[in-house]
Length: 452
Ligand code: PHE
Ligand code: NA
Image 1 (cartoon, helix red, strand yellow):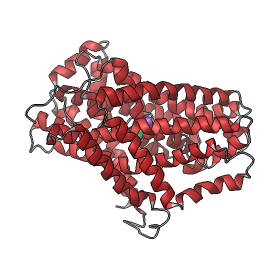
Image 2 (cartoon, helix red, strand yellow; image 1 turned 180 degrees about the vertical axis):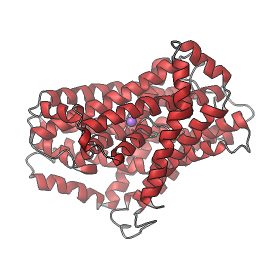
Image 3 (cartoon, protein in one colour; image 1 turned 45 degrees about the vertical axis):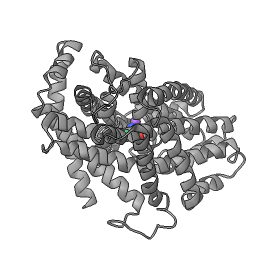
Image 4 (cartoon, protein in one colour; image 1 turned 135 degrees about the vertical axis):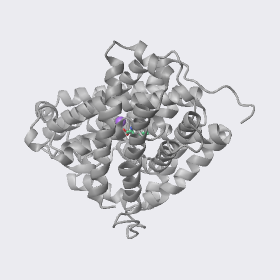
C-alpha cells in the first residue's frame, strides 16, 4: 500500500447522489416492494414502510455515510481505522462485506431474468399469447439452467465493465447516464398507470390504509425491507460515503437519496397496481408479480410491447446500478486493505461472484433436490443467510456503535452545523434507541420464525 494514488472521490455532489440512489434503487423497489405490498394488503403496509424508512432507514443511512466519509476506507478498513484491528466492532465491517458478496452473486441471477424478459419483449414474444402461456414462461426460465447462466454471465460482465472504470470514470459516469433514463422510464410507466382504467383502484390500494389487514408479520417485513431497499448493512453506503467530499452536507445528501428511493418505490407500486387492476388481475401474486402478471397485463394493453420493453429496461438498469455498488463495496476492501489494483480486484471478485452464483442459477433445475439447509435450495439459503441474518446483524452493530460508542466528533459536529437545531438531537435519539431496537426486534423474530 506504499505508493498509492490519492484516494478516489466523487467529482460532484450530483454524481454522489445519483450513485447512491443508483445503489438504493434496484430490484428491491420495482420487483420486491410492489409484490410485498400486494401480499400485505396495500395501504397500511405502505404507511408502516414509510415510517420505517424515516425512523430506521434514514438515521442508519446517515451513520454509514458518516463512517465512510470520516475514515475514507472500505467497510472493514473503516472500523479498523476507528477502533483498531482487534476490535470486535470490526465484525460489522466483515459481516457487511460478506453480505455484499453473497447478495452480489444471486442478485446477478435475478437481474439476468430481467435481461431475458427484456430480450423477449424486444422479440415481442408476449403479444397475442394466452395468459397461461406467458405465466408459464417464468417457470420455463427458472427450469432452464444454461439460459440463466448465460444472462447471469452477461450481467456480471456489464457490472465488471463499469466497476473496472473506477469511481469517477466508471461508477459515477454510468450512474449519471443510467439514472436519469431510469427516472424518465419510471415517469412514463407511472403516467401510463394513472391514465389506465384501474388508476383509481391502484391508488386506493396503495394509499388507503386498512389497518385490519396489518399483521405483526407485515410490520417486520416493512422494517426489514426499509433496510434492504436503502442498501444498508451491506458495506455499500460506507464505501460510497468514503468517496464523499468533506464539504458535502451529509444530511441533505442522505435525505435526497432516501427521497429518491422512496419515490421510485411508490411510483412503481402505482404503475404496477393500476394496470393490474385495469385488467382485473390479482395484486397478491407474490414474487411472480413482475415476471408473470406484468407481461400478461401488458400483452392485453394497447402499446403493450413498448410498455414491456420500457419496464424491463427500467428493471435491468435499476439492477445494474445496484449490483455495481455491491461489487464496489468488495473491490474497495481489496484495494484499501490488501493493496490490490482495481483491475485485478474487480475481475477477481466478479469472477468469484459469478461462480458462486452458478448454484443459484441451478437452484430450480439441476440442483433442485439439493437442500442446503432446512429444506432450502441454494438460492433461498443464500438469501436467508444474507437478508435475514447478515444485514440486520451488521446494521444493528453499526447503529449501536455509532449511537453509543463512536465519538466521531468531527462528523457529528458537521451534522450539528448542517441542519436546524433539532436535527442532531433527533438523529441521535433515533440512532441510539429506535433504530437498534427496531432492528433487534426484526432480527429476533426472523431467527425465531425460521428456527435456525
Ligand atoms: N437497495 C437495492 C434494492 O433495493 C439492493 C441493494 C442492497 C443494492 C445492497 C446494493 C447494496 O434493490
Ligand atoms: Na431500493
